[in-house]
Image (cartoon, rainbow, N blue to C red; front, side, top):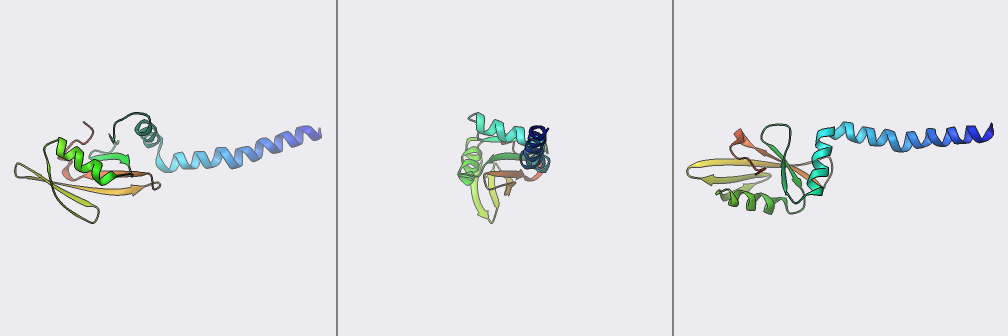
Length: 121
């Protein structure tokens, strides 16, 4: 009987200290975003499209260079940066992309104004 109580206590504590925090973390960032984080770490793509139109996920390491290289490969010219906003031009069009750090220090979300550019290709 005493072993059973100890076993149930151990299972209860494991639930409290492991399962609940993991569930809260997933609830905080969202299941689909958690899958994107996994995919971002698993494959070689540096930018992935999120559920919200015009939002893209990337790793925080060298995020400015990743964005500039991606835009250059799409034919856009880097004009400048003001705070977290990056400005690009292409054939008279202007694109403004803002970067914000989310959830923790390892990931950044790019938000493309008016969804002019698709960064996921």
